[in-house]
Amino acid sequence: MNKVLKWFGFGGAGYGGHGAHGHGHGEDGGHGHTHGVMDATIATTGRGIWAIKWSFVILAITAVLQLAVVAVSGSVALLADTVHNIGDAATAIPLWVAFVLARRKPNATFNYGYGKVEDIAGVLIVLIILFSAVFAGYEAIHRLVEPMPITNIVWVAIAGVVGFVGNEAVAVFRIRVGREINSAALIADGYHARTDGLTSLAVVAGAIGVGMGFPLADPIVGLLITFAIFGIVWQSAKSVFTRMLDGLEPGTIEEIRHAAEHVPGIVSLPDVKARWHGHKLHTEIAIEVDPKLSLVEAQAIAAQLRSELFAHMPAMSVVNVRFESADLSAAIEARETADSHGGHDHPHPNPSGALDHPQPHGWSDHHHAPEPFSFDNELGQGTLSIVDTADGERMRLRLARGPVTLEASVVIHRPNGPEVLVLDPAPGAARTYQSSVAPEEPHEFDATLVLANSGEKLELPFHMAEPEHQH
Image (tube, rainbow, N blue to C red; front, side):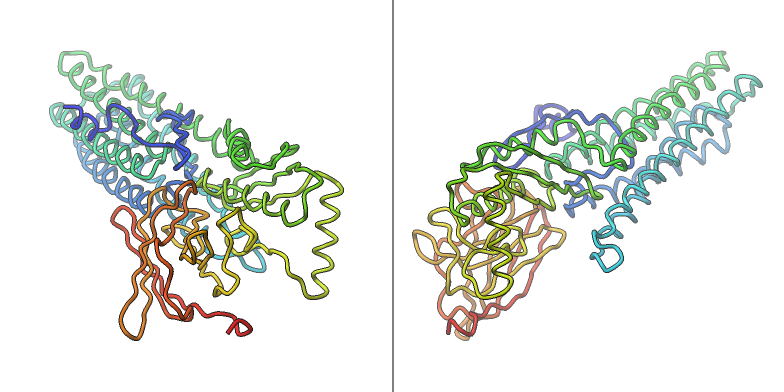
């Protein structure tokens, strides 16, 4: 019985909020229900986008069936419920268009990309819901002032049941997928759809009232549904305009500070700022470290902080770290200025946002290794490299963004047949996968990185070659 209840979205959440850290926030998560703001775990996961598309299809079919009954019955309660379902379905369209545009690469005009398009889409969604509330409210008030008989009462009741079934199907679907991808927002959407289903049952109650000789039951139910829609408008508008004004959800800064607690060597965090750019989080953080540390040691701490934030918060996209100590900041600036004018031998950030070297003991990159392979797609963003460990050379995959669980392997195309390296989760390192054996020599080869998660599979071909001076 518990399995059946869990399948339908009742019972415990069964998901952790932040992967390896396990900081779950429960299903409420302080989100409430809003439209127009896309959660990062939905937007960056193919499974989440799939859930949005199928939710749209189910609600659209439900609304079309209800609309047909509205046309032959004249029920304003059913009209209000239908308009509500149409509004819920229609919100997916601008959000999906915005997400497609937001995935375009930055250019000379839009240096930060197109993430803000999602804010514009959020405003359009709020306006769509507001229009549906005003329209439904007008029809309900008009019917109260000038009562009109409704016909086909049985069909009105059936249409209300159809609305309940359609919304419950979406609820089960969103909750199940939300738990799969650890998305509190998608789970909250699921429970909202369940509430909408109960609203549809109110249409049935109105039809029963009319059938029992109380004709005003229909417009009264329509008016109650209208009030419910206005409540959603208010919640959604607050969320959308908070994002537009660079506001943050409660607890975001605390999450960043909590992630920093996992990094040894950080004395304090004098300043932490963050803002949303579409569904991605950009963070600026000042850290204070022991001023006696060497430049290399200080930069290693900053690199570890970046890695921890990327692993701890799936929405994190950009992390800019600066040192609060004036002496240390001046030393780093002087060193980087000197390096820009000549040869040097200190670590640089790689495309994933972490340092090429040094790393904590046993995690240094191989000094004869080929250049890392970086990727950014619907399954995640990360870097694949050959590194030195205490056990010898290993192939390592680090994800800056991606699902909590992932199946990964590397197929190296050798003249005598393929060499397959399975990448297993690295102990004590979130979103890091590593082979149990060393890749064979030579380290110049064509290969394919295979990623799989929740039925999705990607094959990413790449080439690795050692720098010429290392041959």
